Image 1 (cartoon, rainbow, N blue to C red):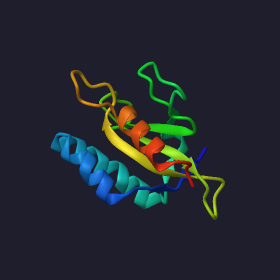
Image 2: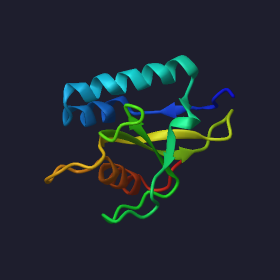
Image 3: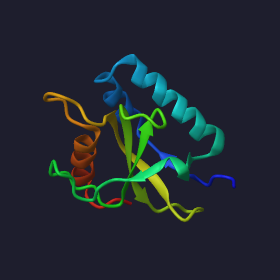
Image 4: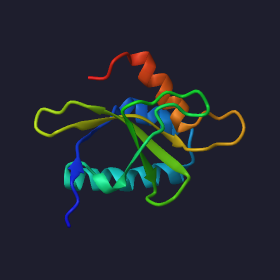
Length: 124
């Protein structure tokens, strides 16, 4: 069965800021994912996973989905919020890209996404 693709919108300046905190391999893997998105007009539904609406770390990510980068690995993640799309049932707006479960004081991708989601107000 063919995969369905969901449109993905991201803020280039925000992605640049996220990548500045990460090793170059994270940028390479994100580039691979974005080429797939460009080639197919979106991200495959099969790559999307639901974020916990309320995380143990105090994050609140309702209506958010995550993508493991690279696929099937636990290192980095992309977190996006579901938004309206004019031609599809829905689209995704990327909130953050980063380390999923860091050690030390580095914020996780979920913490970054939480801050951005709640600073922006209601998603549109």
